[in-house]
Image (cartoon, rainbow over all chains, first blue to last red; front, top):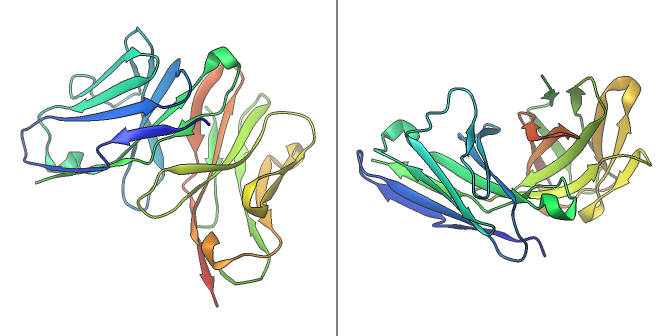
Length: 117
Length: 113
């Protein structure tokens, strides 16, 4: 149980285009989802927290107009990198938790490798 | 603000030897503590977690960790490592009422024959 998937697992795009990454909780309802960014050989940095049906809360320094997050259902959150640039190339990881069940544990997806040319 | 320190960037251990990865946290209230493992190009897998109760926590893959409040530490241990344990290990902290996870910088574990 508690499986989180991400799609795509990797994506290459041209500079200036937009890329959408999906995060799905497969066997539980994710009341909260988190988006992280990880640079090579570095730790995970939280970008934003999203609760189903409400606007995402972004961490300081993260541009909300560039990284659009939608959490329209209890099983799906999307991160759209708009007008991507090479510096946006990174490993993006989502996680999900189910507050209703009382669990504080976050379940992580396998990550999406974004390369912007 | 809460923070996590993993003082060892890279550790090399012989297969079959014991392992201890260090983690220190900084937070005023009772922390929720986690250890995650990440293989190259993969997401994170939870090894174990501590919320309350017994300070010695057993996890998957033969790992354990001990919460020591007096030392603000949550070190990860394994009595005998296997080659498949080679990976990046992250310690993380959150707390009741603050759902955000703060990660340490990670420790890369290399296993030699």
